[in-house]
Image (cartoon, rainbow, N blue to C red; front, side, top):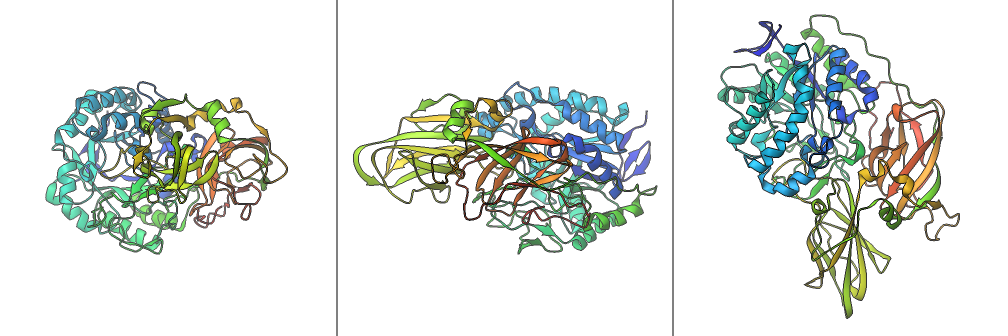
Length: 632
């Protein structure tokens, strides 16, 4: 049986040196109907391997309830069919700019700071998860005729902790579960990261965006032997809501890739193709989501950006919440829509010199929507009506319960509290708000609160009923505040007095997967300004008639903030703050003729900025990246 092993200086395939030219492509960020095309694009770029994380929270939304874990196996089979080998990074923590770093909300809510440690209760959940997960990996290992060459232990653990007992327990769980291919760790090329995150006897790799020789010299101080590998070459970066769109110069990225290859190292492009955070699964950062070398300037990464993943002083990933956008384009060589960019062509030219056979031609581009189509909105239901139809029961608590107590991963919670009276107007403040609250006093809009602005502009007199509709904008996926709770985590203050006796009712996003028919939709009133007229918060229902189904973008001019579905497929969050101004609609989601559209709007639609909701085809010229700050 042919073996893949780790030698003193090289990876060995059947005893002969081999270089891994890998690209990150996450099966959970690409519609399954498009896996084949995206994998073929990796091959056409000159790669021989694909890497993917595995998000635990996607597959175990509730303890012991598993959802489509075999998707990983189907993806690995598709990779092998495309002529690619595979690297699997199962976590349990993955970062990945993914909700909660891939850890289930119920787990971090229960375990708190004990996650990612030797804590037996935490490890018990990990062991149960690995039993299901490894059924998809073990039979597909390389020595069994499958594509899987390597499996990662944890993920960038040295950026978080130093529990070597925990890392060894994870490695033992993988080995005990049948993993026989090489294991590896990946960390920033810093002494504290490599000492905290690596394991004796397990291959150590490094992650960086520039200065490859310096990074590998640091790795060699810790590991004198073993193959050199950059497990994450950050050839682009991700975007935050309300910030500028981030790009990296193709020439500068190509220069760093050349340096990596000239060092004789293997490489994994992060990302080769980013895809999309469908379903509201985008994560968030805490004042440290930008490249840690301070290279962000005017929305662009300078050449030499992303030096080494080190934390600068004053950037402890503990500041203002920075939620990630729905697009995970990442300024990758293959853009969100599957098209080659200038970076793709530069990388392909470099990689061609390191392959034994001519590179394959590019696969045919996916079909694009034939002609623009306007969405016809026909029904509306208030947020309260939606909550009544799809939400959980209303429960009463002495203090506001966190989202985790109400079993909410993605969605919102309506907190209701009574201000006693009679009393004169006092300031109303929400302590520990995560992340955003739309407030109503006696049924009338009173303002929007955030972590940075937690006090209503106008004071509130009693008696009064206060409703706070609180949204999570994504759980932190990196740093010391990963796993923090959501919702109202402190309390509601009237002047300096806590208001007790809080009623709470939760609405999970996955309630829309198979329940929207229970919502009491009414016709949209024709006269603007009447209750329920177009523009009010709530769930909108409509149709769009498609001719020539294919990849498209949904444009939402004037809409404020919420989620969109087409034919029951959750496209993700939209938000008028930018930089993303449209949502990608994969071609397989659409069908010829009528398609159903839902929009869950949390704010007020701007009548001044609003226009028709339109589906437009994706430009398929292949000449570059369609800036999500502009749209398709």
